[in-house]
Image (cartoon, rainbow, N blue to C red; front, side):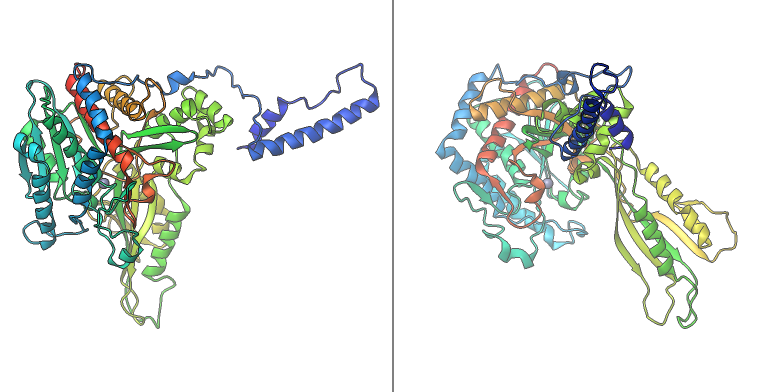
Length: 591
Ligand SMILES: [Zn+2]
């Protein structure tokens, strides 16, 4: 908080009574003394967060009311299939069904389907064969699904199912998930309370790799459809399932091939909406918030390479290539990307939803956010407070992390080259080219200082052919850059309304409530990417969300590490979510 603001706030307090004529002089002194004391105490309390000063007003500013900051659509329950929906809701709560559901999920966890970075082609790398028993498991476990839905195997292990609806003029609903799991580090097996591929159910939680990322999603979808088929449900709107097999290794063989297949088979913008893994719902600042991933950050690895003459290290130059690279790295770290909460970004919308619905955020933050839609100054103040949360800030800004470095081969030889790789996660309202420009500008001065010829991303920056001591080159390290995802339409968009209404209906139904408004649905995004990175052309309505209730802590805590688990009650609620989603989408006339 800037000093100017504190002064403005103090001005709102009664600093002096000196203009009051009726008081004797000595009393005025005492009053002034106590006033100063009061101001000091209030200021101290303000910083401790116990007291909120009156609202700041800037001329011409409007405060938005809470409903406008983060409008909430009503719960949406199926009407044509209301009886079926009610009936399934009851079935899912029975002990018999819970046993069935945990067996389905536990059995899937027991088939290890680990995907590793840098795997070879499908027909060369033996490790891909891990998916054969998994497919056999699915075939045996979901007989109705396999008897009714068509199945295409894409690039051998990618699974695309189609449940053909009676009205093929309707755009299908696309549900996605991934079969693979993050490898279990063999050194950590002893740290698991239950073995990582046990799928052990202890009566409350189900344990094992993939139980919450993403076999819960994939098996949740298949279990839901198996049950709907058993009940005789026949869809009007087709439902297509896309299950990749190397999401944890960037989807190069799985989702990338599946995207090609789907585009070829169904065409561009051919799906009503896409729901994949991603956001969860949890308690945040005194409210329950379902954060639906409506964007993803971009990704860019920049290789910074320095070359300079070699030679014997007994006659060294002032700076070796390693020394120069070290200066460049230090300079990069000293200049992080500026963080700004752009209006229209999902994290801005999330902040407004917190302002509108989360009782435990500070009053000052709420006040700034309520003005933020119309006041840049208020938005800057809100940012300052929000960015004290490191995770929030990292989600908003383009980040940089120097993750790899190499140089030199021998202690008596001057290194001829040295390089580092800087990993960037690009802000949702930025671009790969903005990162290229930023990094080039940032290092330009040092390239001159060290007299290096400078090229960046295929362009010669320094004067071509000018004499130089060495070279500095910036390049796309692995040719795997990714632009930030297009932002999914929210607000009044029919698909968002349907998804948000489904979240609310599921939440209420699982707790026996009606119209509780107990869960707030907010746009937002995660820190990483999903298979949806390949699916942008299939529909603008991409939602990374599978209604996994993670309580008070973030999902990030338990996935990709030891003791991954899912609470079975939360898993049952996921099945209700998929059921409600399929039925709502089937009945919708606005998608
Ligand atoms: Zn995942």
